Structures are given as C-alpha cells and as structure tokens.
Image (cartoon, rainbow, N blue to C red; front, side, top):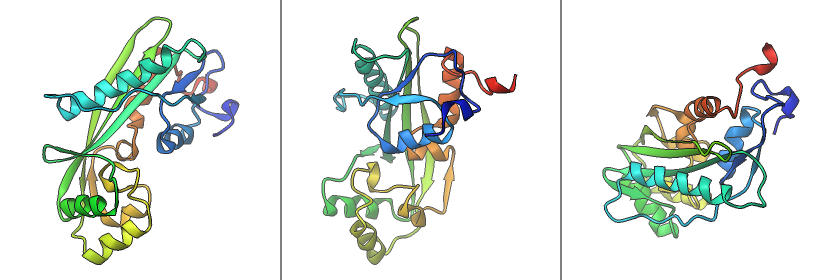
Length: 211
C-alpha cells in the first residue's frame, strides 16, 4: 500500500476506512489508488435466497458484509465497505468451482460467448448510519477455448477460489478478447463508482493535497 501522505486521495482529517472483505483482489484494487484503509474480513454468510435476483443478491451480501463488521465494537473506523461479485451466464450464477471437473464444466460453458459479471458494493457510515448500496454490471466475452487450453488453465490452479473459474487480471486474460464496462468490476470492485460513493459520504476528499 502506498504511504498515506503520498496518496492523491488521502485526507489526514478523515477517519479510517475498513474493507470488510478477505479478497486480496479488492485489497489490491483499493491499494492501487493509494487509499488509506484496513482489512477486516466479514463473517456474513454468503447464501442465495429464494426468488432473489443476481443483482439483489450481490447488493444484499455487500450490505450484510459491511454491517457485520461495523457492528463489532472492537473494530475501529467510521466507514465500512462490503462487496460481492458473481459471474452470471444467462440467468445462472456461477460460483467458485469445488474441483477441476466443475471448473472445466464452467469454462466450457463460457467458451465462445459472452456473460455478465455483477459486483455489488455497500458503504456504511457508522456515525451518520447512512449507507450507499449499488451494483455494477460488466459484459465479458470469451474466445473459443480448446480442451487443451481449458485443461492447461485449470492445471495452473488459478480458477480455484474464483467465481466463474477464471481471473481476468491473471493468466485468464488470454481467454478474453473484449469486455463492455468496468474492468475493475470484473476483478472484484468497481473502483470508479466506489470512489464516487466514498466521496459523497465524506470518506474521501479527492486530491485534497492539491488545494
């Protein structure tokens, strides 16, 4: 993480932001902007409710993650950021593969076609109790994959622990000729929208050091 006093987004007068996620990808995304924050992983259950749309799902889980950490009295900070990402093929949510066979099935089903990645985010202000919750969608297109490419990619181990069995920011980039929408959203956090929400809530003051 960049030193806070060197960050164009840092304001020394604002209290701490907490990222309520164990995702190293979300941590890296926030760190890339030089945002000063700490990581406190949420323990909220990641379950899919009956009759819940994918958009409702990622927004609800983002909200629950942020609130679960914010309600811990021993955790310092004022703003709490929760997020959840799913891969959506048609109307089917693709989660993290349990094994190589499931990863292969997912990748075959995505081959040569487009799918959607939805990331929800929720930012909760512990003092004012205000919250911003939203979801962002990006369309991702896969090239036609051969059996050899799928088997080789799975052998790298990268698909495991990833929704949809791939990582656009890693080796999986070889499969993706085009996207429509936010790249960071596919990685796990729509940075443009999240930064704007943080600014509206007072958690960030953009380029404060330039004033």
